[in-house]
Image (tube, rainbow, N blue to C red; front, side, top):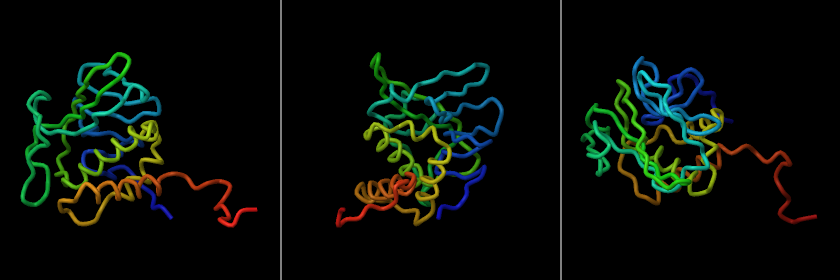
Length: 190
């Protein structure tokens, strides 16, 4: 049984606020953050209506970086000895889009709370896997995201292998997917 999630539930920079999932601090006015909507991503920006990116445009290259400027974030970022993201300058979600092909960097302002490095890596891996599977629109379903986040949060805050990261995300996707309404199938057949 999946536990209920409420505002403030988070996975690294991803947080539920006002019933909406977004990357970055949506609680403060005049911040940059990226909202997961049913139709795609929406970049919120101060003094602007923002911009939207439909789910079908998103392809490979999803990654998170940390720093004030998108062009100076070629590395994955700096992390503290306690396993949290170092620095408070903000972050970027990098995407490669199609029709037309272009690289995009969506800015987000960090929350006051520190982000565990393992949570940021799990979030990035979740987004990558859904894009690779052709199912990024699942990120626009708040209930689905809530179930995935519950499955991915917690645990030891230590560096993890790529294999362990894939296994954790694959398990979270499976646990977030709704159960088959027909019920379990009989392996013996009819």
